[in-house]
Length: 118
Image 1 (cartoon, one colour):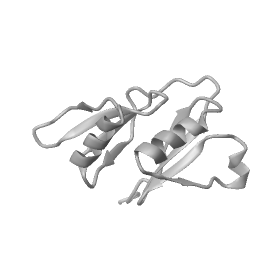
Image 2 (cartoon, rainbow, N blue to C red; image 1 turned 90 degrees about the vertical axis):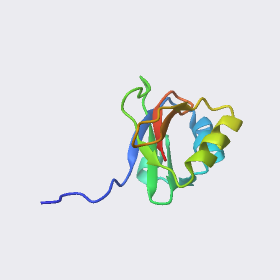
Image 3 (tube, rainbow, N blue to C red; image 1 turned 180 degrees about the vertical axis):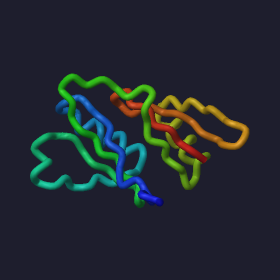
């Protein structure tokens, strides 16, 4: 039995009241589009972003701690161009090439780890 065929979204946490920093990174640097949150969730803070079918939801946690090990793995349409773009914007890109896979890690403005896959 195959129960799942895709991930709808990944949720990461963020500190309260820093939505503008999230927008600057996810929209301004990563080029994602902000999605409107449903009205019943909007009052909780946080932001939702999308690029194609990939969605990242940021939810507010009062006692926030960044996800240093758990992370979304994002397959990139143009890995080399994205890595160059990120470095040009001062983002620390930590490449970790496997024999079968080119990949790198970055952190969002809150310290959440994100994997980029070629």
